[in-house]
Length: 511
Image 1: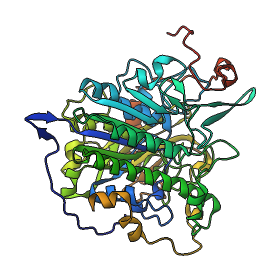
Image 2 (image 1 turned 30 degrees about the vertical axis):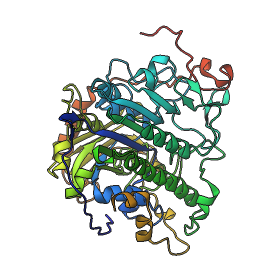
Image 3 (image 1 turned 45 degrees about the vertical axis):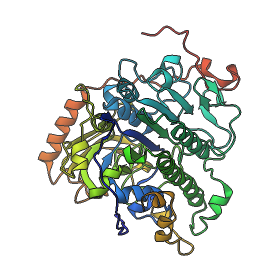
């Protein structure tokens, strides 16, 4: 971990502000990056992707050293919003495509619905990716008061189009919506659009009501084939110290993401509600250095990438910030899983989390820098055919994984042509600084002593491997199987709907 010593003098207050004798629930802002690699933030040591705004929150809040997610986007968002492992909801494995009549099952109450019950105004900006074939799957029917963003897995950063390859060939459609209406008049780089929308929501928010704002950026996910990496040219030019031309564009995408984080925090400060706001920043899964949806992210020195159960796929960037956490800013080294956000944030809001979930309330553990209540994490993908279990310092990986995704990647992207910009200067000029001054066997790894998963210990500790395998098999009995094969319905084709990806299956009877 790379840290700059910073001395911070802030007036501390309780987590809940009392105004005129009334209890005030904290505002909660949840910022989600898409396919951001472990090595793509400077607080993890990167001198390529300088992220001063994200770093300032890590340095003055709580950096989550062992934060885990599912290894691909639809499952991770499912777990985040339901508090349940994706495999017990039936949303594990390959992510939703826009031609599928599938969505997050309606019997599961999700995070914005819980916040609505607590009196929160709930807003979603950016990516949904949990179903859109039917109206009832959409975010404004699942607890969000509003949604400006894309419904599928990604979009072009300027034209807002998502392209898929079907048996009939390439199909593409517009996928940027304001609630139920295509945002045809939108113009500009999509990270900037989402940034502007988030700032507008904050600026116009009624301070007498608590706000739950989820900003799910497209960045730095790749775009469509032919133009997979997209960033404003002037931003890319500032990255000429990077040797890899692809990495330059990617770093520009990350720079725009970091700028947005800074602007959101500054907007909260300007509005006068930062003191009573909890901010979470996470990545949905590891970066895609190669292969499907490649964006030249780096998880170095961790092994594996997105779509794998190795650390590079599931151990991701995470932090939590509140003015009140600056009292004991620290690196929290306990285990946390994406499913833990529901109970943890509900506890932070003064509510009792539901009992029928896999997520664990870690609010007190994190804020008091105590040991984690979690010591087991599962990654189960019966659709692809792999599974893993982490228990304490050991991790067992079993099944079949795409070979070229399993190795250590990213080192080749770390080349520089000259000295990078001064990190201290980047920090002090940041917006936030001004506000707060293929494998078919089982492998066993000790991810504490060997975090890069280089040494298989299954023959050294066969009893540990057998015990973890047995526990993994017990967990797999909870799986709600995925539908096989993936079916894209031709009725979803954008050419039938004014070249938009939109609702198309409401007339279909469902079970």
